[in-house]
Image (cartoon, rainbow, N blue to C red; front, side, top):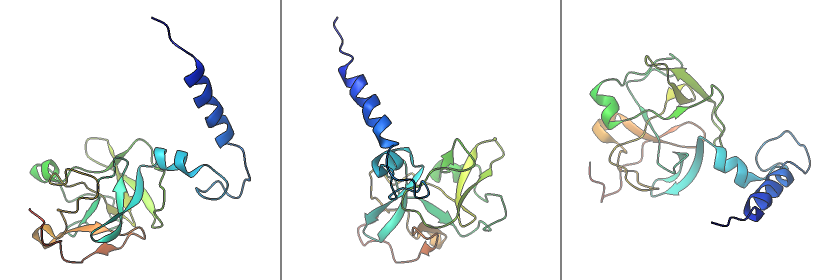
Length: 164
């Protein structure tokens, strides 16, 4: 079997060049390659039926839970709740983001995983969202809400074709 090192060499060259450019604070869109930043981001933004919202690294919409107390360092979702609403997790206490302007952080869950927070509110995914851009968890039980890039919850009614 014959392999070529050309694709690997080209990829390395692109990554090396991505570090070149003006240093204006190291923020995405200010002299760095934003496609690399977006690729590594735990959170980014996407346009949906509810407007621009925060999504995870796989493009799935993230939600906040009204029963959580922002800034408490704890999640009120446990047990069966986590089966329907898995937490958005990160490998570091300072997760990378792209386009998210609210204050991003983490809390440590009981199992030791780091759950991502936005403006102090823990973030979750919804089991019913099966594709990028789905917002079917919006308004579930009047306590689950999509999140805007600035960290505010979106309380717009769910789309009429939502099934939850």
